[in-house]
Length: 375
Image 1 (cartoon, one colour):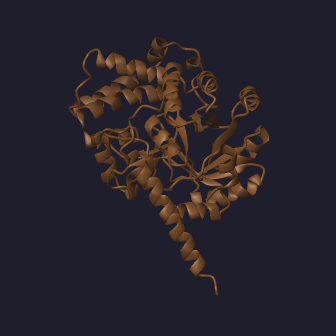
Image 2 (tube, rainbow, N blue to C red; image 1 turned 120 degrees about the vertical axis):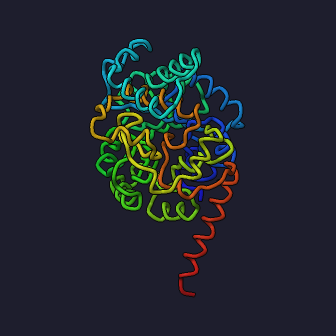
């Protein structure tokens, strides 16, 4: 399973794990994969603390950082302070969310806790602008074990590309169409993550099985391709490699592990969610995100709901409500980004168990294929 990209990055397995949780990043990296910390919702100070902790626990191995550099966002929010960002959310949008939760009997957060959570949300969501992402990248570059930086929305700007090349960082970017991959190549991106619509988080409409060979063909060997979306089994890794990818990019599968950032209430919702209940909605960030369907996500789809706010304002508004839902333990209102493989995960495991199972399933899939060959 050791592909050219594995050799370049110094990992043993072509399993790239995207996670907002430092424990998952460390566990995957120590198990031979390549952990990538989703940093888009961290403030620079929070990211520094996370990376320092990861450095201390990955036993000298390399890992990556993922940031969001949106091309469409609220430009007034670029340099706004936390107070300014809060003030930019229209009162009508606030009222819509407050009325929804009040009618559902979800209590407000206790004084003090609300201010703390709101501050953390605003500081983190404030990083979801080009300047915010630049600040996060500067933090990442202070950590020599960070070997790859991935842009989740579009190619990094030329100045960021130049800076990363200067530091010998492998540059990656996500794509949902072959034409996106072509633009990434022109910008100098070296690793392109072909993310099918099955994936959790920000996704397009093309399925992974269709998208990956299109992106591989578009790259023509000029960039390594990772397959993402709907991957939780070793047989799917074998399929991705057969399609020409040099590895897989997985996110949802780690949410059910002991190391995950989800608490027991959240994991139980996760384990009960069916594949068809992972839907594409804009409620969480203002951009299309595949997430668990709930009364909260669907309220924004109904007639009379206010229009979605641009990034990062929609995320600030939604995540404050999300914190109230988690605090109250209300399953019917709970949503979290998750791909369609959520319907394949029903109980808590560990990262190490997932990695081991994937390797066994990969070998079984290869043996099945070899058995089809004539003697």
